[in-house]
Length: 274
Image 1 (cartoon, rainbow, N blue to C red):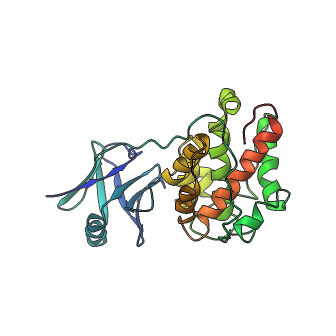
Image 2: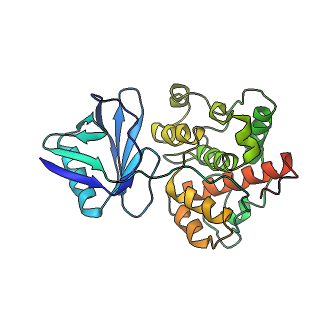
């Protein structure tokens, strides 16, 4: 039996005996799905890792894509995946949590990468009162007031495998999970609808990212950027790495992060956050 060892990743959110099938296969990612709708992703090295994913060397990734194309069923056993004649295991568990502390606004003036809905990123961040940004911050206000947010106008909005509105919301949640006063409320996990409700609102790939974000777990490029901002370290390389995620996903996530940080500075003006 061929054994493929992932470089690093998260824990599969499936019990032993679960059966998964090929969902979608791309040049940088292979998604396998559970009958309940949750996905797990095998990433090609170089683009980071999602909270429900593993990273593989290029050659191993190519071999795995061929195996799964030929036999699209995987079984889960002891945290590993087994197929017809091969096993996938993980070497190292990654940390997908953002650090808690003061986060500075990222300097985005030189980045004209396109967002999905608001044009170039460096112009979009200068539109804090844009209706789409207000869709986000208004629901954050509702949540802080103890009401149930209504994300129906934002989740699933825009282009992409992970729509722009979803990416913005993920970025904003990353900002919130870094803030001590927000964490003290112990309500972040109730910010979004449950997974099955999310499946009715957006793509299955995006559901995975939003479901992880609601639990305070984010992709490694986003965690790395926030860690650098929290430590006042050089962040341009981390910004560029995040911008390399998808066509507009990285830019939309950054836009949401900025919106979240600005919202925090408004509702907690004495915290010096952002």
